[in-house]
Picture 1 (cartoon, rainbow, N blue to C red):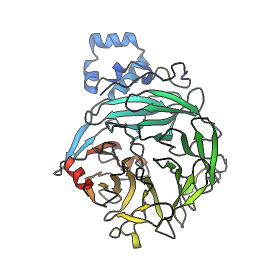
Picture 2 (picture 1 turned 30 degrees about the vertical axis):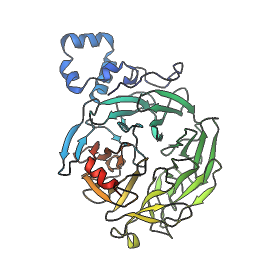
Picture 3 (picture 1 turned 135 degrees about the horizontal axis):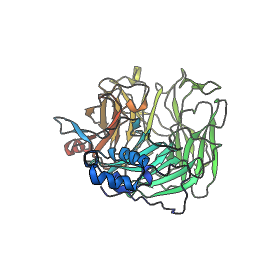
Picture 4 (picture 1 turned 90 degrees about the vertical axis):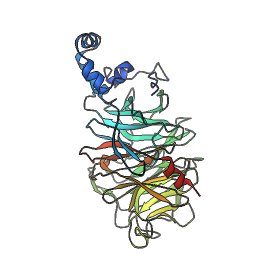
Amino acid sequence: MRKLNDGLARSGQSREGEDRTSPACQPRCLMKLNRRAFSGGLTGLTAGLLGSLVSRGLYAKAYAACRATTAGKLVEKLPSGVEVWQVTTEEMPQSNIYCEVPYTSADGTRFVYWRRNANLQGANRLEFIVVEFESWTHEKLDEARTISGCAITPDGHFYYIRRGKEPQELWRANLTSGKRELVCSISEKTPLTSLGSVTSDHRYFACGTRTDPTFQSFEILLVDLSTGEQKIIDQDPYILNPHPQFEPGQGKYLMIQHNRGGKYSPDGKLERLVGPEGATLYLLEIPQGGRVPLRVGTPYTTACTGHEAWIGTTGEILLSVAASGEFSLEKGNLLGIRPGEDHRVVARGYRFNHVGATRCARLFSADDWQAPFKVIIGSPQTGRTVELCASQTSPTSDQATHPHPYVSTNLRWVVFNSNRFGAPHIFAASIPEKIREELLST
């Protein structure tokens, strides 16, 4: 794995608010040791040399960081040729971020995940770790304040929020080189409350926010990354979980999830995520913010599950709806929708729940929301599907126990979560060439 660039694009930028003795500030040679080398080799002269270079506190943090570089382990090899690898070994809160878009480098050889490290001090206690497929080498990318605001572009630039000179700094990192740069600061008056999204040309950033202290209204924040302008383009009592996603082509639309009937108490406790009417979707025109309705959710279909993704640059959205009635497993609850058109059934036979689609629009991914919670991949064009593997997770309210599968940009791996061995971990399942060819054949 090529070493990530540890330099900042703006070398003069101060990193106030960061624990300066954290592993992110230390030489990468410390972080490249694997666990066996570190635990077995730090004796005698080696330990003495390291102890003379760093403080006891830094030694402990370096040790924690080095342990994270342990290679993955093969846990299953299926008759189909699929290999299932456990990527993470540390037992700490961690997740593959989400499944709507692939959080991989442009060439699909690396992906990024988050974890919460109890050893970190200061305001930024979340870590982003970059993993190289096949070698399973881990390398720390940066520390962050929150998972809210995270976004990735098709060219593999990862956006995230950290606390520095300002409380909400938007940073960008190239997942191939590791080069990081400060993009802008976002006002604390608009605290970020959802994952973010960035247009393919890096012009606009969007995220959910809430300026109402009584939790009765929610907004969509749009930031022009070229001019610095920040404005609210949508406001509604039911966009409490908006899942904003820019159309990956020209970026003229921003998809929004509308949780009709959702409600918080005035003191900020979630009373219900959605009401009897169920969720639907709509689009916002960019940059004006005009709404464009979509014919999904009641009365057009059963309620949207709240899991949706753009199918590449086709202009079509992939989504799952409640699997009942006319949208039963046999009839199909995985749908495609375009503005001004009725839905189409994309695939049948499973209780599709969390969904994602590749940037090239050739494959989709989903979890089958029933034991053993299979990881499904398929073709949005033909509806052909394959059961890649069983995640064997036991879902709880913890999102890290939900599979949330996505396909790497090079169509060779699926990244997903599972607690099959107890604690939540991140796994990767290979996509053999034969399976790819079967799915992609017309």
